[in-house]
Length: 401
Image (tube, one colour):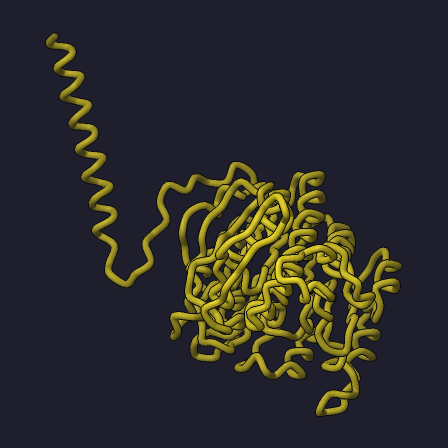
């Protein structure tokens, strides 16, 4: 009996101490400050490569719509480590894509519209630039122009996302290995200054191509594939007439878009993985956001289908490789999309939108592969930069510390 009482006493004492420490930790966080992450164990294994996929404008409703439209068979469900990212920019509760992507690329919050600069418009070295300096291969893939806000934030340093001609110049100032997307007009004599950046890229040993077929022929070396004058066409085509009919969305009838995103992503991976030191690749499903701005359910589901297909191809590759971390998230949600009905068996969903702009809700972060456990929990979007830098063992630039 005495021993039982002693055991009970020490159990209660241990619980009280633990509770007191936990309570102290929670209450000691200054109001308005970001709480320090706790309970995150060191990664059991660090990756050689990171593939970072951004679904621009993708929130939980967009993902849920995709799951429903694909009848519960999506690639999102293959990723078992899940967290949430807080998306606000430095000055605004609701971020834009430029500030959101810059938070990922430099690890600092900045003002809306900023590309690769901090809140004071001072250029900050991006994770892509740091990886490049450390000898890793690097790449960008997007269905927007390659000079658009999200891809631009990983390679350029300008005060405004609108300066796409200026952003294009940065592709000459870095040694990025692969970039694929739209936006050819920002690299040709159509520019305001009349410069032919494509000619300079060829002199810098880039294989410059303008079609998917020519892109597929490239087997090694540096690649610049600008597949449209402006952004890529939308993935959806003819599904807008039937309110709940998603037939045809998985097979796009636009010969200019088709499977551009998954094919381009795997082409980039094939080229970058030839570097024995590893690689960093950012892939953006750009137009999920545009479907949200248009409050167009079919557009969103089409783009989500394309993004999901891309995730599947990337996960297949990463699973075979065994040394690659895949991280999937969004910069923000767009449209305030809500699912008001649907049927998994029929693959249809009803949706309504609250407005045509971004919202301030948290967005999910999915991870797969070595280091995936580090992406659990709730944290600011800047923490994704820190996690990726640490896992790749990259040194922090002085100005980013």
